[in-house]
Length: 115
Image 1 (spheres, rainbow, N blue to C red):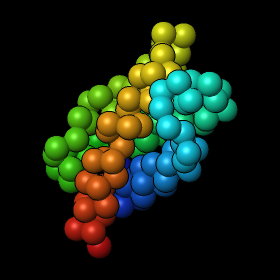
Image 2 (image 1 turned 30 degrees about the vertical axis):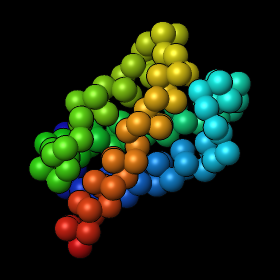
Image 3 (image 1 turned 90 degrees about the vertical axis):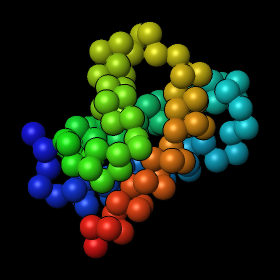
Image 4 (image 1 turned 45 degrees about the vertical axis):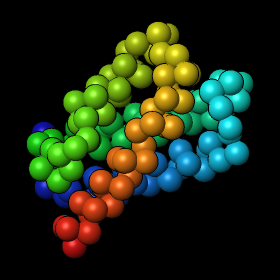
């Protein structure tokens, strides 16, 4: 069910990205991330919330930020919930390092257009 409040959902995504940035501040690489179980758990929870916000955005997400892999963003929540035993921390680290920056930038731009 798509949201009627896209600005609120974009804000949810941005807030969780900020939390992730805080949790991994000072973490230099995959090995350091994997060795910090609390950070891994916290980042996974934030990614699940980002995923749920993307689900609630529905097709509005694609309209607001068409360059993002929204199907993957929505899908990671399901994987975290149902395939938790197959999720490797290095996969999570890769998402943090390679995907969140562009998601943050695109969500900020989309939020500005909505204002």
